[in-house]
Amino acid sequence: MNELFPVGTILAVLAVLALMVGWLALRRAARIRGSAGLPAGRVVYADTGDWRPPDKPLFSAAYGLTGRPDYLVQTRAGLIPVEVKSSATPSQPYPSHVMQLAAYCLLVEETAGQTPPHGLIQYPDAVFEIDYTPALRRELLRLLGTMRTLCSQSPRRAAGRDVPRSHEDPRRCAGCGYRPVCDQSLV
Image (tube, rainbow, N blue to C red; front, side):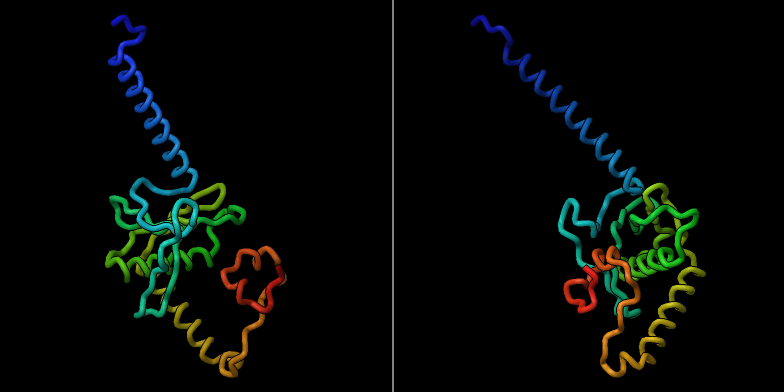
């Protein structure tokens, strides 16, 4: 049989093309991972909803704490929480963002049984690595205690009334998880 392209040649070309497509897909995934500020490792939890439904929130009964980090990445150093922020990149991470990340570290400690060495806060133009130190953990626990005390002493809470919205920014309302049930929404 006189074939222009033997079957073996066609299969070899298809195999090379498949390898090239796979290599390009891996390079694209690495670029996306880098732009998201994710460390090298396996993403084991995601709350972004971009590529799969969000996982259940992490919960600690011991601390009465619930949270959803944007990502948890299993690395050689351990399980690393990553929080992605869309606000302008500060010269230093905002203290509230550091405490939020510390809360995720505490939740990983409680739910996974391993203490993260650090967490990451990804802003649009920078990634900050925050060490999860015993001092940061103590500061978080002190803050949680203060919040619980203030909530229990609140006359509004005792009277069963809602706490009023604390801002006049429609953009904050648009991104709020309570917007569907809020009677003070600005959007």
